[in-house]
Image 1: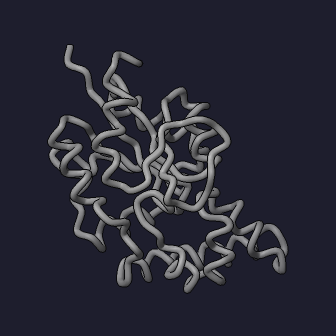
Image 2: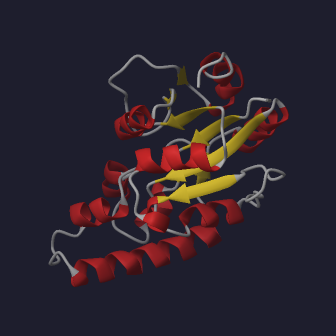
Image 3: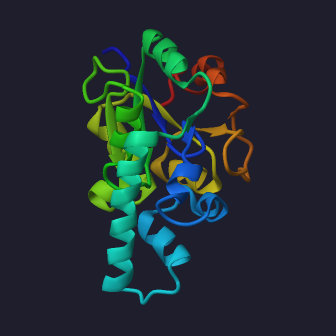
Length: 211
């Protein structure tokens, strides 16, 4: 049986930097960067301490999430150099591309729509997406879900912060650190200094019989 090799990507700090435009919906860029990658309920609890936890905070959070999706659909973010070109090269080399994020529902779709990236089937550049806002599962659960749902024989996760690494370890997959992103990793892992480095690094991480 032919091996199906997948690369699962984080969003913020890995594929793009949307912090400036996300801040337009939430707070300051510095505040947003400090919580990027965390589940949306944790972000709200961190940023909205001036509200009472419960319905009031949830309402403010949902309002910000909806506005953020609308804003990003119109204005996008800073796409890291070489993302689309590198995805195309990886796809041509036989790898399948996926996205798993801790974001709210609609966020990944806003990103893909803004840049005109096709998604949803094996013929598309990005084949499948999942996020915390869709099913309220933690990132490790969604990484594992993505690999199982797409019947991947081998897969790795590409992320930029420690919690990405921790979630990947829980999911039982190898990890590649996007060193140019928002954080550092307290472990010896393969790294990329720019997105295009994946063309060389990915075959060194998966494709050698690990399942």
